[in-house]
Length: 353
Image 1 (spheres, rainbow, N blue to C red):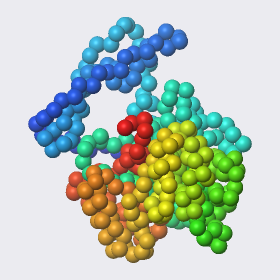
Image 2: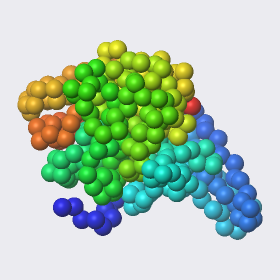
Image 3: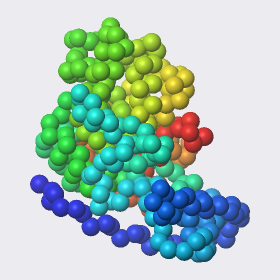
Image 4: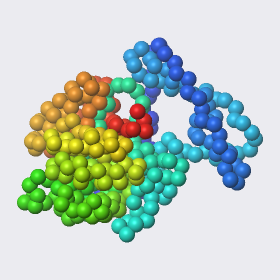
């Protein structure tokens, strides 16, 4: 079992010298704001001049130089604007939660901060090739969940099944380990009820109110996630009328939606655009064949897609073969110029076009 104590932050990788800059983009610092008690509230960059330089190889180098702050006395630094302190990653931001009959549900904070931003895994901001890998079904198997959290690198995104066990404990372990997480919600497949994804499955035959209620039941299981991912759902995702109220609720709560790409008839993109919901599609199912070599070949294919398009998303389940292959492939990815990022970094976000 993992130690429940807080992990020590990992040392930052050694910074390589940048190529000569070909373009420079000055970024003005955010002005300070006064708080009610008279103290100055500042964002973390308000004491610096920030300049972003695009190098010859397309990478972005950010240069910080000091500038004087206005006024005297102490300043209150609003550090949450640049993400959670890793030592506090298992703790929710109370301003991004509301109480409900089904537990505490995510909401957009009073200052406009969204859960998908607060709990997203930071990434470099470089223009290189980016890949997100999502390992789903955590919580369904104790041994599989424990092994995924213990052995997979922190760059891997985890999706927890709403019907899983001990989800709060596993969520805390995953967040302490540096992982971005999603909540996986059961949606109606084409062969339902012969194929039943589990209790409180969202169904096309149910009223919008009932489906949103079941969505909230799943959402209330844990906190600290950036978005929702489907578990099955071919029929549900092909029905815009059933999808619309559910996706609208997800979006207004400041979450993203990840479509696992398993249904060719999915209407996710059209519905997401109509509701201003941040969304993403998986490009490949990595472990359709449970064999380490076959999964490695799928990961290589995912890498080719990412190099062609700039980014790609692969999904897998927490099987031993998947964990072994992803662990091995991830060790060598950085040497080939691949940055593994959280899925939130690759979402189509209407607020960040």
